[in-house]
Image (cartoon, rainbow over all chains, first blue to last red; front, side, top):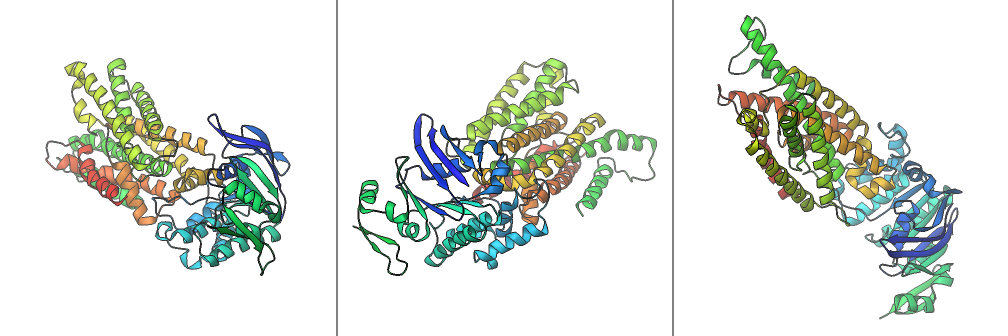
Length: 256
Length: 307
């Protein structure tokens, strides 16, 4: 659905991402991991065309990404980014309805179906009681869930998530990944998730990309990427690897 | 409801004044006062109010800042300088005035936007400060120009700079009416995109807004609205700040409502302020801009503190 071929991205004359290639396929979740400043967020921005690539190319559903309009991209790709505070009184429902922008007419009002799709997303994200509340009255974690609800409300088939669980409690971390997984299964969608939680990556991702200094250090299944050698070399810490007794997936413990 | 309120305000505006008019049963000279002086003045006031209010509402959403205001951002001063140049070089021709005012507003808008923008985005302090810098810079040019102008050309100019509707003509009204109508329609058509821009520029891009195009439309229209308003009536300040703020308090932030309602509320506000300006120390007059600033400055301080 979304493929990158040898893409590089630079800010000024500094290369932030160099020669990254991958293929995001239907029903798959790719976890994007790496230290701070490795280029993860920049890569995600390039994948929906909001940051230009300096080299290489990105294909979306078989066509070059730069041949799409912003609206067409938004119909296909939804983003969950770090929420930024707004100084205006915007309600949770209004915020989620913004996700319907690309599907409806740009000028008019939302249709009944837009509103019911938004409400469904709100209830999926456990936000029903917040529907009429203002965004700036919510806690960081609650707002984060609203941002997810907005992305789900787009009905886009590709989800790009930038640290979606950063502010979430355990229950809602699991909810977040369950919803993303469910979307991938039932709607033939796919997701790419930036996370610092290696165990969440191991648990939920089908593939993992490990970035270091803008380059792909390792790319493959969780058990191939999350190895002692890789993690030690990229993060410069000692880790202990074993098997999660509940899921059988690889489990990472940092040794301090 | 706002339409009724606007009609009532307009009616009050034409009947109240240094000479009270009953609206019905008029003498010949009263008819002249009504149709040649009061009516164009009240109509122009309404259009200027609507123009400034929607320009403010749109700039606030675009810049994600409830403190953005044409007067405070220096846009009005840009238009004032443009108008002044029209006086100096084209004898204040009714063509050159709005065109140069529009150009001046556009240049000022662009300058403030470029200055307020940094790599990390735009913050309140930077925006307000850029507005102050552009405003004072333009003010100093205006002062320089006034000091080299002949006394005859200068008459009424200082009054006009503060915002003054006493020179109202039907010609000025037609032009501002056209601008306010086009502005309200086009800005309303962009309101859904503005709702997303208000949340964040990145959000707007992610969710399908052609941000560059919307920004160009809003800056262009705001310059047009402010340009025509200032060319006709000088810099009436704070209308674009107070009116959208009150509208948002009443009905929330959805720009599809905020923009058209601000147009009506802005019209009412300026006509009321002008009625006060005409009658407070009657038979002498105050500039309407003095009244709007008297109300607006405290509101601005309140908003700044709350931020």
